[in-house]
Length: 434
Image 1: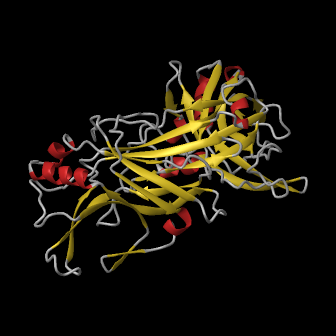
Image 2: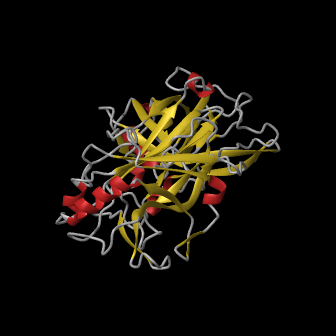
Image 3: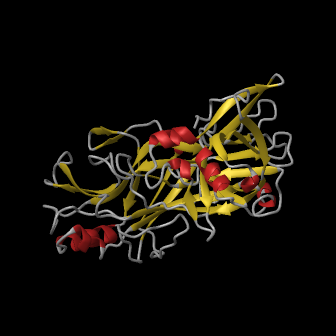
């Protein structure tokens, strides 16, 4: 079995190349879990909104728990104020050429129970008290580059939302009577942070939730004075997001109303294919008649998709073929089983996806030159999955193509479909068995 970028050639004895055309269309897929904690990777979440002239509006919100991480926690003095801190993760998605994009944020107290042992999806909705507990407005260009000086110390860029005093007092009161983090989050169930910019949002920043210290992780910082006559005697205590004890998830909502993309999603249109990181547009593929191929050794089987630029896409530059809003660097295939559930393709190697299997499948973008024109293609290598379909005489192999799950809601891509100059195809090279 050969990597996607290597071609065994068809001049070997009994080696045959063939292309299979696909039945494909764009569907809406919202099955992404956003409460996952991955070992060795920091937890990140986006909060904001992006207006896309072709794909419509996307809104990100964050459900988050913080905990004192100490039993019967109390401050030595009366709290003066408290600020919710969300450290910038160094990444924003959207129109990076727009340097004056503002986002307005509001925080609310969650009233539904949240559990670190539960699974939450981007579409999960939890109830919250409609009375605001905090608000903030930030210029995204300042957030991503400007450090913040707090109590005489320079801190890395972060979002600050000052919390209402009555909510702050309840947080401290419940902490003083709690015997553990689990006990505490059963009383103060969580905070919901959302963007309230009604229009014109052009970039969403992503934030770290976990980290090794205050201002490097999500949390609430409490400020108090040890000497009310001395303004330099400001001290602080904190509650933070704790991986093992605190629940979280990213809520992401798509609104395609009046957007051109609405004419392609969940419609019988196969000339153009759309893709976003879940939740959102995904590519549904059916490959018929693989079972009609002779039993053979599949050397290579790759799905090939070509990026295209649409005249009716306001985010596309017709002269350069580039988009204002960037596309994913990798596409991710899954198989749809006979029950309609998504499962990893066989090429991911079974129960554990490894970096080597990801590299083998590839799915990254590459620029090639065709007839003097540079085009961007994505190639997805799935020989084991195709081999299984041939051996099992599978009538139709059903696949779904998504963006990665690491940054839910980010990225967008337009590809050529079946009836296109650059049509999607499955190219197979196999060795016949005697």
